[in-house]
Image 1 (cartoon, rainbow, N blue to C red):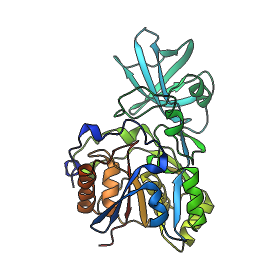
Image 2: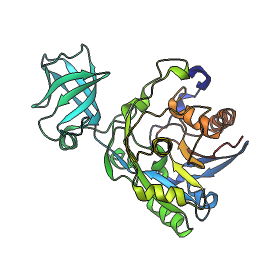
Image 3: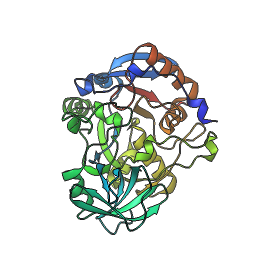
Length: 336
């Protein structure tokens, strides 16, 4: 298949610029075979069954965007992609760089009065040495990296609403957006109904917003992201008597990576597209994704290409809200 097979026309006004007033009040499109039901996210209480297992991503979105000056005086913007890439020094980070001219080794960037030394180039990312631990520096001087299609400044409410209620492990530069719809009350009611919840961590990288550079899916190389699956989560998956429901595409990629390799903690560049054979996942809760994105390809692989594109057209016709702050979809794995 080709990247162009995953294109669709989306009216700009359907790109959600802000979250719904209440998390669980987002709309939910339930895909049941070739039929669609229009619900609220809180209706998961009616959709999920006792002994179903929800797997959530507990990553925390860090304040990964930094704006400053090059030592030559030009403006520069850094987006921290990965902290401590070699697992040896928490003062080092890989960053995307936006500047009029590329940096050269030995030069530095000033964030306020603080110097960040440019060490070397690693592929499309630049390695910087920070004056203190990167997470500490970002907490003091960084800003939340809202996606590029949210056309406004970061607001105080984003500090809360662009994090899931499951967030525990700092490291992502984008939210695992399917989890944004859960609130504490819904979680309590789900657990009362016998639905179990387990967590894993996949730190979403900036590559999630990068367009594919090739039209042929067979030639695409996926970006790497770190993941960690607690042994007890994997035991819960393997012993589940109901359905294993992934809350988001990040959970799918982490679980499927571990299933293929047997590795519970490491890096994955697993690219899932139509034709992939799923090992562990029965159901998927996900937002509506960008045209031609690898996330859309994963969802189409899971639930069926024609079914998903029919669902997307239905969502557009019914004025669902799209992307990170948009509405959600529940679908089950295609069995044909």
